[in-house]
Length: 86
Image 1 (cartoon, rainbow, N blue to C red):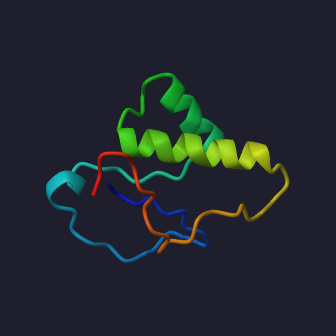
Image 2: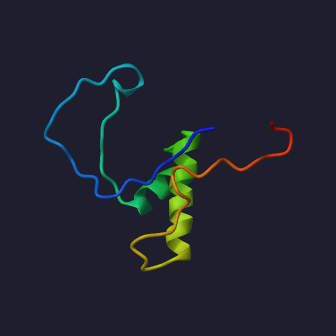
Image 3: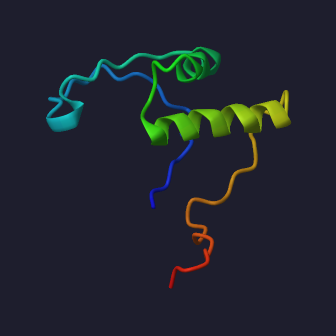
């Protein structure tokens, strides 16, 4: 299992760093949520974690229109128990 966090107050930095491994070919871009969701639905974003995070955020914002801060689970909330897991 992995955790996905919603960052707020993020801004671009002038500081450069060397990207390596899986980050080496990434090109950072700021895009509106609607554009990212469209990219998911068109199959241009296919990473499962990214897809689920973007669609979850879209669902939360749709459920609470006009709300600047949507109530999410705390970052340290325990994972839910599932049948068959110890």
